Image 1 (cartoon, rainbow, N blue to C red):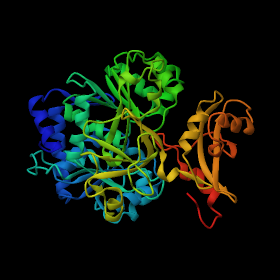
Image 2 (tube, rainbow, N blue to C red; image 1 turned 180 degrees about the horizontal axis):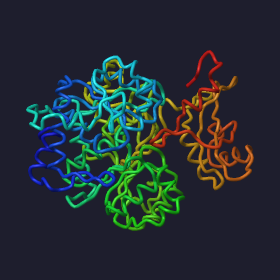
Image 3 (cartoon, one colour; image 1 turned 90 degrees about the horizontal axis):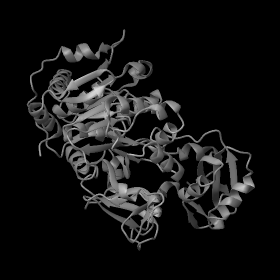
Image 4 (cartoon, rainbow, N blue to C red; image 1 turned 90 degrees about the vertical axis):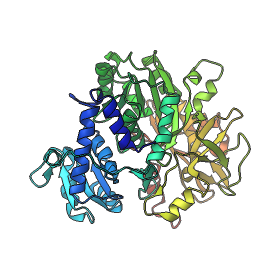
Length: 517
């Protein structure tokens, strides 16, 4: 198998006039996109970028983002996408940690660049898409470079992209994903997504997120057309599906929830949508049922994965999405492992495999497993064994049919009086209450038990704290139930919908000598 940029070259040669990407009112063919990638590669080489160097990008989804991804790889360099929701100092940390020599910045983020320009330790070349008074214009930089094809050919074991983990439990780590990782992940699009050359994919997730990044590459892998959504806006997504007759999309549950609440979304014709994949955070049964009513002709598939495993490693197939069928319990699962993936459940303390049905840490062996964490050999060794078993840090179990059920993150587990309590189990019970619209459960200090569960809830009525606790006690063992409840206007989440547990916990532990969590 050639590298991904060589595969792009093959697509451009075979179908030069086929549309590769659509962004807003701009369309670009495979032939033109390949030419642009050559120019990007030449501009990077002229800026001194060599094999193994990092090229950072801070932008919302764009054609420039995609051409930088492939252009960096065409000279053996590695793109480093930066989360545009981060604070300036957090952006500077990632650019410096990656030792990025070139930094490409979108027009909205010039103020961020201004704030950190003097703090960038390795960056020798900074360009701004659209240009500015202080920085070089991206278009002029690229168009001034020669279009001669680069001679470098990737080893498929080379790192293709370096994505940074969300950092909800500490400093983000650079996850190195190779060409081979992408090829392994993208075989699934052929095997189970029913993708054809006539399919139209929408890249609705941010390209700094593993889902957005993999889907951007899948356009080239499958030789089809992708619609790039500038940002994950529910109305723009719905209108884009209607305008371009999108057939395949991946969305996080929070977007599916918002789409059901916006009248303009309900007015859009989304009948072209054949497959909707969802994942990256838990989904309530009400949200899923509502989404299926909103899109009655669309197949739904849930996926579970992580940045470190190049996206999804399990899939809950469409046939298991029958809310009124005999296997409704499977809607609470993350599905079955992909064909290229083995999953085991280990006791977090002993690292021994546990019996079917018993909760433990999920570990996986798959060619999608990352090469490692950038500059962190100890963290890599702790997460990835010599025989390629990756410790996900997620807690769950396998049932007798091989379906994976998620409980929580290992680090989110509450230990109360020696009992292990998984917040997700309590959150699932809370979300079944008709007056609770969102919630999070965290461990808070307890003189008697060390820590106890606290429920933070968004409610639509004046239900009392005790009523909520009693509701949980009807459904869970008493030791698992919240010892206290607090109303909130909203639950903080990262862009993929994951609850920011650390942000919620820290205020309760800041005056303690030792934080249990």
